Length: 280
Image (cartoon, rainbow, N blue to C red; front, top):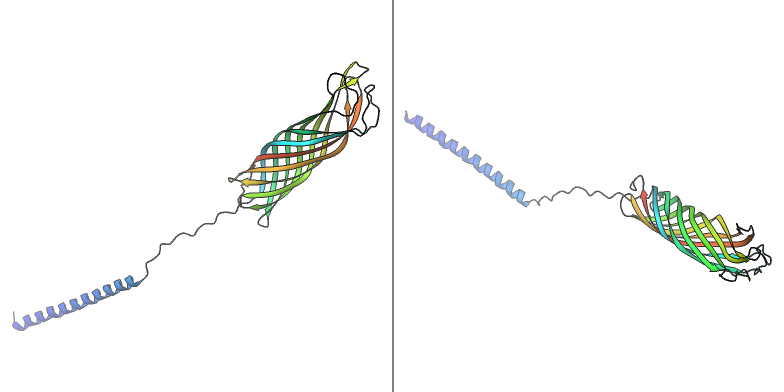
């Protein structure tokens, strides 16, 4: 091979090596520069998904439930007649009044619907019915004559209480504080025992039965402990005013008129199932 050719080829190799070195040096510088720049940048923070706010609790909807509790009250009985009695020669004490303290239990159910507005206010309508066993008994002061053996007694028995009410309350989340009021009904039975029917030569027993309308006012606290269930504690006062009640002796046919005034207080706990889901 000619000497000049060899020199030429060797020069090309050297030139190519210089170019390769230059390229490698440039790439290394770029890599090192990028690494240094990346090292100077702040570390990337992990990205979290945005928190989902809990749905606000709503008392809007209808419900059905049951309750149980205790009741107590006073039955005030007075005699509107000054003298006279159809039950033989018995002296009636004019204007005498006796109060019987009635106590017992109630159990029943309720239905209703509520509507929540202006964020925290709740209005609703409800009806309830309670089977009751609220009884009282006292000695009767209205007669001077007895049967000579047994004490003369008055008895009062309340068999049921019912109401139709509106309510208004203030809610904060799962709790509702409310007041209620409306119309009320009660069914009552009375008895007068062991007074002297001289014409019959035996004690007489007179009784009466009535359903009376009055009013109710009360309030309570309700707590929705899971999605569709709530519990409540409630106090109610029932007022039935004064009404004349006729006692009849079914055996001998006589009758007596007394004025009866009724008032009851009831404390109860209840459990409601709320339809439609109480969440918006």
